[in-house]
Amino acid sequence: MHTTTMTRVTSLIGATLLGLTTLQASAAPEIPPIPAVQGDVVQAEGDFKIKFSIGTTQSGAQYRGLEYFEKIVEQRSDGHIQVELFHSAQLGDDLQAVSNLQSGTLEMTAPSTSPLVGMFPEFAVFDLPFLFPTPEVADTVLDGEIGQKMLDDASRQGLVAIGWAENGYRQLTNSATPVTSPDDLDGLKIRTMQNDIHLDIWRTLGANPTPMSFAELFTALEQGVVDGQENPWITIEASKFIEVQDYASETNHVYTPFITLVSERFWNRLPAGYQQLVRDAAKQMGDYEREVSRTLNDQIKQQLKQSGMQITELTPEQVEVFQEKLAPVYDDWRDEIGGELIDAIRKASQ
Image (cartoon, rainbow, N blue to C red):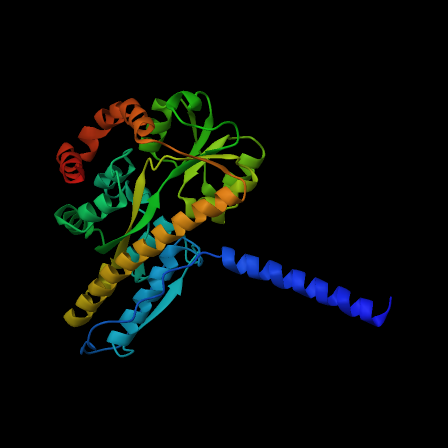
């Protein structure tokens, strides 16, 4: 091959690769930047270290929120509090992390509420279907009196609960058919968490709920052990479920928060000024994490569509059919969760 021809080919390959790189870069989600830290330096005695562990990955909204928390606490304590972040369950899953807080071997974690129902039965309210019609309603409830009371009630058993963030709305995917009504779910094997309300939801809808660990899920979908699963868009994309799931429905059927927890043993060693700083940072972290979560979810949904997943966006009328079908689930769980709490949230949702 002549040198000139070789040069042209090399240039062509280079241009193609550059084009592909640019395409990939443009497809990457645009994450809202971490805000500047506001507020004066807090004066207090002592040096402290916070190990903050979460189960979600480094690429998710939750970890981005933790980076903001770290920035606030370290800057406003003038370096007297150092924060070390651990993602992807490096120090154990949600329940292990909570146990480590109780024993004092870990300072902070932020699990979703679902795994904590055994400790705090009232958290089961967040597993009820279609409780929060919009994210804004969830914010109003969690940032208001109801959310504060739930934080106060969860501040026991060696834990101090100081704030909320979001895991987000769960969506349905499957490999068999588009789902626009409960009839489409008839007999479909849907993987669920080992959670009695979630099992009740899918059974009531006519599906065949199959509880299994998340670690086993991709293989189970690939081998046809189950037909579908439900998770937020971020999880669906990160887990590459598009490789084994052709259809998705934007059901928004369950909204799950994250709760920010501190070890009571560690908390009691902190001076009051630093306790308030950590509370303030947790609140700011939660607000920012929600913004990142919602931005990522919208962008990722569009990416999944562009990658070939058939996504059905349910109309309000279609959602109403699901809600009516699931009304008995509220009756089933009213006494166990607490009718007053359910009524108070529903009233705030209107």
